[in-house]
Amino acid sequence: MKFIASQMVYPAIRADVHQFMLHDPHVSTVGADRYVVRTLYFDTPFLDSYHARLDGHAYRTRLRLRRYEMPGMPPSDWFLEIKGKLKDSCLKTGRISLPDTLLQDHLRRYRSLSVQRLFEQNPSVFSAHLPQLWASPLQPTLLVVYEREPFVDPRQSLRVTFDSNIRTVPTNDPYEPVSPTRRILDTVVVEMKFVGGIPLWLHAVIQKFQLSRVGLSKYCSGIDARWGAGTGFEGDMPSRPAPAAARRLPLVGPVELGRRYRAPAGAERAWDGPESAALDA
Image (tube, rainbow, N blue to C red; front, side, top):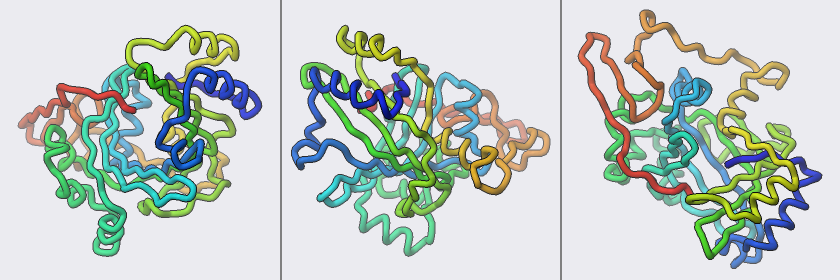
């Protein structure tokens, strides 16, 4: 569940949460309370992943390349992963760890990120998705960078994070610096991840601060800012051609990975999504 909190209210919410939860040991062990998340999202030239969310498809997936940066520590490896959403459940259906040296060598060799060549590092991870991933013309689309303060409850599967200073830039370079002027939200995103339900004390915090649940996607918000009016960006949003005019596989049903595609000649190929799901921690 995601909520929006103002910068003024955020410290009070954080203080209440901290009474019941601990900072994630991944950051507390190095004397920090937050880290930077750097994520490069992939999409088709027609932004099919973006439109899948806007169209409200119950099941959708998104390919992204992510790493974590903590003060005073070397950045983590890069993680190429598929983030899925099934109604209210967040899923991770595959993840490949890529050392920084490997990614830099890849960029020097190909000058951009090649999805197919990155898959070759460990194709078995995405075995359930390989047909549609190979068929989809995925390309680096948007870089999203933000600061995250994570809390965990060691007694149960509960994680609460505060994301702030969310900024985006359209690029194919995961290392590109993102200026503070690219910030897309002046608020803090409070996210709660859990299995089963939230404890009563957290429900009381939601009521105390009158937090309203929102369906917010950092990627889609960044795309809106990229092509929104008055943002200082130029260019028109790519339009999706009508099936009769499209020179690609027209999609039948939800426009997303793991769904059904129809070939132009009428020969149908069905590719099902994964049967299992894991909690996105």
